[in-house]
Amino acid sequence: MPDNASEHGYTIDHMLEFCHCSCWRWRGLVDFLCLYAVAFRSGKSPKADYYGVRTKASTHIEFMVVLIDVLLLIGFAVPLWSKRVLHFPLGDATTVKVVGQQFAWNFHYAGRTEYSAGRTRR
Figure: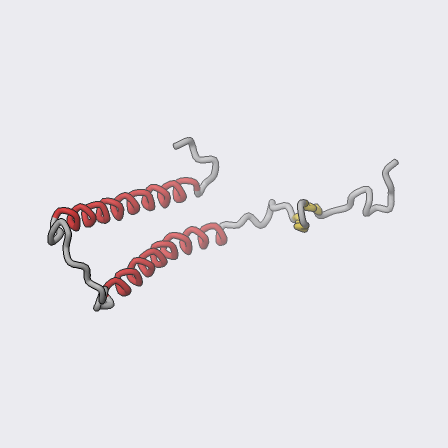
């Protein structure tokens, strides 16, 4: 990784490393479960079950995966956002009004300009 250009760069790097490690662990678990399912199947051509799944286990597992993902996201995003908001520079910040338009951004800096002073450019 390159050197951090900001104070909070190390926390973002740590979050990315943790997310990548978590994804690799989940992938390892899924790979293991797929190999287990292939290795211990009931036969080469089992009889088809036309009724499908009779339990709600898959729904509960999907809900738990989504819940874990949301908790991880909130667990990382909220502390980083609160650090960012609490340490906002107030004294030496420049006030800029930004207007977004289709295909353009207009920036208006605080203070007098030659247009606001009544002079026109020639």
